[in-house]
Image (cartoon, rainbow, N blue to C red):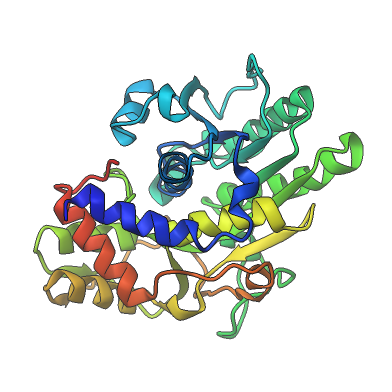
Amino acid sequence: MTGADSYWGDLGASAASIPGASELYGSRIFVTGATGMICSSVIDILLFLNRAHGADITVFAAGRSERDVATRFRGFSEADGLVFVPYDATSSDAVALADGVDFIIHGASNANPAMYMQRPVETMLANIVGLSTMFDLARANSARRLLYVSSSEVYGQQAGAEPYSEGDYGYLDILNERAGYPSSKRAGESLCVAYGMEHSVESVIVRPGHIYGPSIRMSDNRASAEFTRKAVAGEDVVLKSRGNQLRSYCFSLDCASAMLTVLLRGERANAYNISNADSICTIGEIGEALAKAGGVDVVYDIPEEAKQTASNLMENSSLSSGKLEGLGWRPAFSLRRGAERTIAILRENNGRLSI
């Protein structure tokens, strides 16, 4: 089985996790952040539905680089329902589509923690101005629904190790140097409610936790991405801390199927955690799972004075999946299975995913 064939099977398992997926058939779906880790996985599933089930979905892949989109979705074209649309999430310029759109998924956002510090203004603009532009597109086209990709960082800091439910908000220092990301995600969620109240635009919100999988980008410097690259290369996984922080990890295709479930089944103006109850673990444990899948060891290399400014400030960001599962969604990949598939697919594809 080739790498593409192997990943194709995973797409089938993920598509089967979406209740009422056939309701997407024949629709026109606009996706920002098309080459990012999360939304590229959403597009993968939609293109799978087209090719495997004749779904006739038009997928507008919105992004800055047509070449990047063509590379990520190599082998697909407009004949398969894939259409590139130039888009800059930091711009307020209107987006025009000749034939309208039914659904909008706004996932364009700076998801690189180091970049929160280097480009804080652009990070905030993508989460607020970019979202406002998508709502304007929804209004102009009478779109059925918009889905906003928020973040588990909206919860702030809380004591204890219990998974957060959707109403559990804690302290967020808005003057912290990296606070622009979670603060603007909070503002984006409020904007979803505001557009519903003032302009009757229907929207839903998802709050992904920590996503891992074969759709990682080379520029991603988050811990799980670094672990993945090391394991794929056959090198020991290196932890720069004890790795005791508790996180909700979710395989990229499970995240994508959860998003499409919320798009179809979520209650308007509501937020849904994206979490796999089987994959709530510490940073050290995800490192161990990826190392085991790659046949390598975990090595601890802890500096005397570790830099913490760019890291997630939350010791516990585990998420309850109860509200999401109440929509009928179930994950297709356990932590062990997800780690194994991540390493295997990237090794089969020489470290970079394309379908």
